[in-house]
Length: 538
Image (cartoon, rainbow, N blue to C red; front, side, top):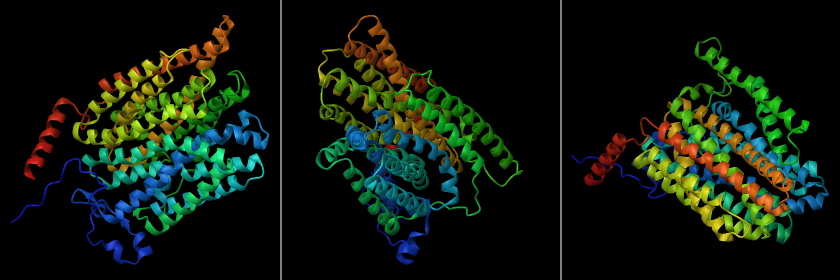
């Protein structure tokens, strides 16, 4: 009697896709797509089945489109501002509103994935995204273009959590790191090509051509979802949202992010900065207290309606540590995305093209590191992988903080290359490990929580660091230093503060990333023995 072939460790799920006959393929094409793919129907013999592979590829592509869209317009802002005859501060809302809206949308993810099927969420999201792209493309006025941008963000805001939840529902525990590394690699490519292609399109055909392209991509995404996407996970038609909590989340997260975004254009004492922040903080406190209360009532049977966002997952210490580490890395990363182009273009006088080229190698490095970081997570656990990542992140940021007026411009590229390799070994492995620490039924809530916190950290990282940079630069100018030299000193100190944050992350990994699958010495030896035994059995 022949024994079944043991799983092959580290085998990429993009190869040797299982092509055995699937029940869902014989029910009529569209009807078959509505069938829910379980974990057993999606992952067999150590690789994905054909329907699951196609569906996951579609979800990854659509999520990539969202990340791509978020950054694509940055290079076109000067042209857009001139065309509409508006101020730069007002024009920046074309990028700020995207991040603001996504931060508000993420808390709704847990409810949406509970109430609606995967196909319903994705198809509806892409319809909204496409309508927004059409409005922005054809808009005769700035407010209509801004509304179109808002709809784009609504359409893409839930896609990354949906993709995360899908990956966790398909792959076994010891393959999730590899899977998240591969889809994360696709996500990391978007920041590299988004601004570059956006700038090229603007120079060749104007800023409206960006939204024309996004309209076409949106239509393609709708067709792919309608004719190729399967459902994952059961939906509960009786589920209801706590719309009062929805309003609190909009007021809380929206107000906080609105206030922080305005720091870039107004002084801290301006009411447009501090008033939304106070209202936002009050809304968030009320929102958090309400979620704990509603979840407690739900679990004791006093109500049939669960909390909008199940914050009880934060009681899991490992999940909380992973969420904080990922959020700090997002905070530091988002701030440098703004600071470094300011240094290259405003302080050194280089073009936007050179700025993009300087940042490009790092983005590619992060994409590659995400893939290998995911594979390393499955083999060695989260702790050693995150240690390497945080050390590289701290080293690259410290090196970058030594820049000056005459620094070789490609030295910045080398530092950013090191930093983003570190990001690739931190972000996805730590997030995957923290979600692995939750029960299967808690993954949806955990994904919504970690993405909400991370989105807020990313939104406030840039304005906070810019505020620090401008404050230090102003003090230097008051001391008699030239404007450019003062700005360089301000950027240096902002980078040093970012390096301190990275060092805190190292300490958190050393003392906080522990337990099952974290990669302690004992668990690492057990993993190595399992892999060696599986390899010798082949």
